[in-house]
Image (cartoon, rainbow, N blue to C red; front, side, top):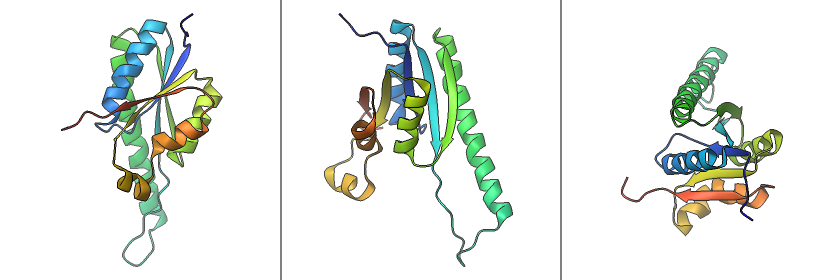
Length: 152
């Protein structure tokens, strides 16, 4: 018997690697009549100025700008989902992307995570790590990775 999904989580960084995964998540949500949960994680990287200090005002402007960027990107994806007849909900989280993806999937009761992967080589993964690999290793629900199209 085929599996039915009620809630599908799609984490997006709005990159070209996320676009094919969004398309797949949208198609799955439509075919299963599932709710699509759209997530953007704001990485908590601490920026340092030339003298190792960033003023609280500058820090707040950076955070506000990051949240605005996330909201606009999620609004675009939510609108596309609505045009496709899919119920979608947007979530913004802050922190480590793999941890927040898994945490959101658990908290929102996701049956499936559909995420993009850049498809980097072994050397790049060694130095940069792979968000998708860490999510696969720690998620309690199935994870579908969709590789970015080459040449884009």
